[in-house]
Image (tube, rainbow, N blue to C red):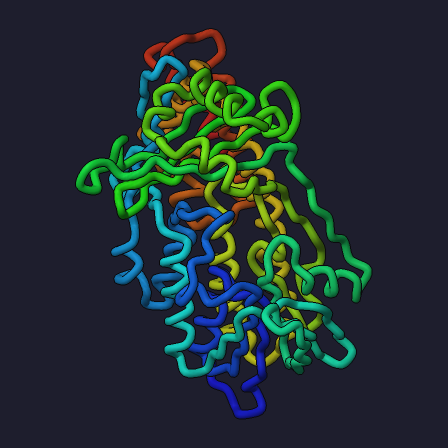
Length: 453
């Protein structure tokens, strides 16, 4: 897209996290004047990771935009491949469940902070992006195209005029609230009655990994679970997901003794690997979980929402960051197609992305049940094995839904639609059998060709 000077609109981005910083990279690369205002301090100069996920799962949808920006060579140095789930039962026994059947069907553990730093640097290197840290959104006036930021350090206000405003300011987005209010839209948070607490398995002697490095570890316990992702230094970030209230809940863990007894009872094999468990439990914050849904995602040609500001999801499909990065790539493609027709850019982006935001929100909620419960269910494992068999026999027709979400780039809504068909086929084929050797493959072929051709 070539631009005249008149086209070089001043774009203000509220939020300089992963998604806001990536959006700044794309826009700066196209020659726009971009100002990014971030509530937190500059994480390149300060350690501000406490309370947020230290590492995340990077998959194909997130890798593609990084490739478009020419950043993957540096990003690969930060990635740890995870080829599947390592399931830990209450007796301490382990069962490895691969994510896919192909060598490339892996996801990657990556440091949130390291990736955010890389994107901040890349945005600045375009020469068109300026960052203003410790500035939170106070108010937005779409009549005058002004957004007021408050400096966290001094409390002073700064009024900023914009041509276009991009809300990348997270699940509690002030930009979203203003955008929805300005046009009588819909905005609601669907809280999950579970929360999370981050803990740590430290590295062993000489930086050794104390458990399998190449897996996402899960301790499923029905109504709750523990997971662990590897870090480059040999440690694992451990996350406990637990109901807020009830006999087994965060509300019930109020003393050091109760925490110690809880882990001894439900996670005895990992308890010994976390010498700082109890101290970390009480010093680290308890994070809330929920789903944000809103409509529309844009206001004419003035403003648009990306990332969690538009579609915050629960973390159980590992797609929050990946979905936000995909937002940035699609927005860039719309700019390439429609140029300075910003109303068309934003409306087309909204049309393309909103149904997919809703779809991944639904699938992420469903995946929580799978992770904390189904991964230990023989019927679930049988259907997964049948699905792999269908994929081997008719790869052009059948792909497991997990594979469509994690290893392909087809729209989330299409993965959800096809996944529902897959499930009906698997339910039929698994009926009355106990092993994959008993599958009626003639029936399987007819079902696949009838419903997925």
